[in-house]
Every structure is written in structure tokens, then in C-alpha cells.
Amino acid sequence: MCSGCSNGQEDDVRDRAAGFEAALDHADWSRACQHLAPPTRAELADSGGGSCAKGLSGEELDPPGRLDTVQVFGTTAQVSFAHDTLFLSRFGDGWRVVAAGCTPRKDKPYDCSVQGG
Image (cartoon, rainbow, N blue to C red):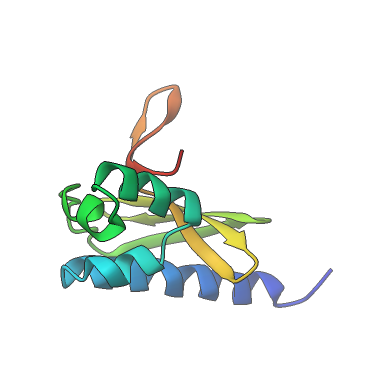
């Protein structure tokens, strides 16, 4: 068991999630897209006429509010804010957002407005 590994991963996940949300707060769609997983960027590019930034700008994501929890499960993570939930996965170059604008549904998976195909 690696003492402290979980904290480092949680910090990396928190930093990625905060960077994504900060880019959204400033309507910096290109920078926000850099925080996304490749399949999620591709899905947004498809809906945005070839541009992830254009696709993301059309999603009208609500401000997330304060960060509540960061949970890491191996190569996946969930970050809960007061008004949003993000899902992330670890790729070769680090953690990336795979889904955003997610709301819980009773007895069903989260409903996410931004996600990869």
C-alpha cells in the first residue's frame, strides 16, 4: 500500500476539475476543452461543427458552486460541487474530465449534459 498516494491523486483530480470550472467561469472554451478527455472533446466537436470550443459554449453549464467532495476509484474519479458533478478518468497524460453538467437520478446513472461517446 502506498501511503499518501490517494492524497496526491485527489489533489491532481481537484486541480483538473478546478481548472476546467475556472475556464468555464471565464468563458474560455478552448482552455476548458484542454481539460476534457479525447472522446468528450470529439463529441463536442461533432456537435459544434468541428470545434470543441463551439460545442462546449452551446451547453450552457451552470456555475458549479463550492467544491464538496473528491473521490478517486483507481483510474476514475468523481468531483461533486454544490451545483454540478464531474466525472474524470486517468489517461497517459493525467486526469481528464469525461463528463460534466451531471445531475443524479433516482435509481439510474447520472444524467450528464457533456460526455464522450
